[in-house]
Length: 339
Image 1 (cartoon, rainbow, N blue to C red):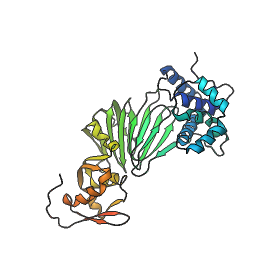
Image 2: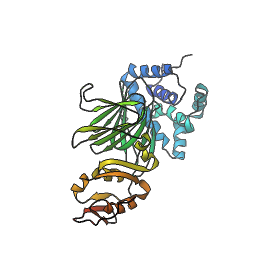
Image 3: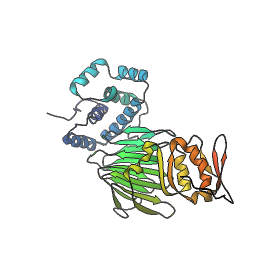
Image 4: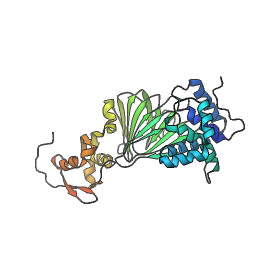
């Protein structure tokens, strides 16, 4: 049986949409994945069309029900939908495959559609967002996080622009790489977490292995390999990586609404807490940012955490309508640290 979608005499976008739908099937054989890879590499237009269809599918998944219904009726008439179900009797979520099968026509007709446009995803402050990638991989975004996905002929690349994300990577012939600030993380078949706070980057492995190297390095220069239960933290002040043993559950505690820090600068802690705080926290004195903090912050009790800071740091908390400021205290009464 031929498992390759036929592309003879039909727009490239239609074949790309076919592949997108087929790749949603968890039982897709390895041979089909290789055929998909061959199709991508056969023509640069194929990868560009697949990226466009994937981006459209993501947008369709977030459409209001009435808008999605209108889209399907316009670009995937009932006869097409019935034929599609007969051709691929697979369980696809909420008819998304139907929308994507109409996507080829939509993309071809859309004015100003640009080839090879990267797919960008973002979450809101205090939000959480799950992203399904076209190869079966997935990304969970923490609060105020943004990533850019680029699926090229030779590599699957994700840029972590800001925030924190958990990656679960599906096996495929092309490498899966995450760029985060000064670090480049190459997956070796695994699940891992990456947090980027300005130029400070932390990579934590929960399953399998990853390779971490400086983004500017040539070849394997400066590369370290991390297994499950290991973490690499890049400090921009020293330009060095610190390797630690960790509890994999603690590395992704943000997925359970807890932010955990170990000997981290207060400036970095505050910036991460701000991704969940209703009112931004500001350091009135930049020198306060060099103080180090170890502990847990519950995202639903941030105000209580801030109120307790004067008990462990030489700070005063000034509260305003639109912000909270931490101001250095020249003297601090000796209080019992919170338990």
